[in-house]
Image (cartoon, rainbow, N blue to C red; front, side, top):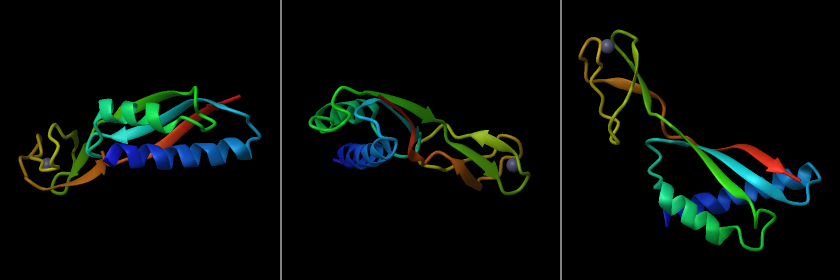
Length: 115
Ligand SMILES: [Zn+2]
């Protein structure tokens, strides 16, 4: 399952950086997930509940910021939010069907709360 492997790698990262800070446990993990990353929020939360057992984050909260997909038109340079999952975009300003994705595929650890 896609979400489970994301959670495992985020937990690894979180534990490594918590240890570096000399923390004994992780209280919250903040993630940034792009709208086009293909992550199902419920599945992510479910995977986290299972994966955190036995880690420094065993009682941690998972806080996720879902970032909207944003593209820039190659023709007129307008930036706009994509409202579909496939990355096919018609520029709302000039109607050109080509755009460059600026944001939307992120999967990153944004912040940790440790104790
Ligand atoms: Zn345009």
